[in-house]
Image 1 (cartoon, helix red, strand yellow):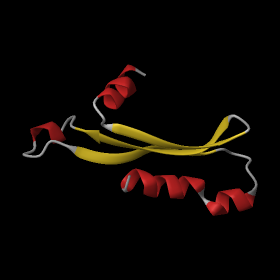
Image 2 (tube, rainbow, N blue to C red):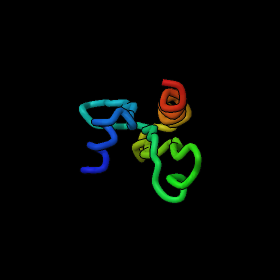
Image 3 (tube, rainbow, N blue to C red):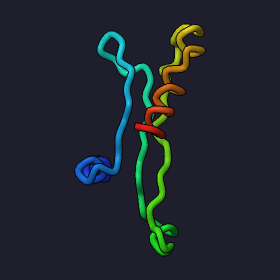
Amino acid sequence: MIEYQGLYADNLAIHFLAVADRQIVAMAGAFIKSDIPYCFFRNPNYGFIGDVYTEAGRDLSSRRASHTKAYTYCALWP
């Protein structure tokens, strides 16, 4: 949790959420990091998509609508 707080404080992380009935039903996050081995490169920063989630048990039409896919695109191009 502390690592996430640091990333948010430095504007190096963002998450996109879908909420239904006060529950997260889909999400995706984007992060800029500079840990090993990338910290030794000329440009030490790299980005990745993580925390991609769709709630199990949602009806198939909801999964086909793919909130997770939409939020992954949001994470790539905020």
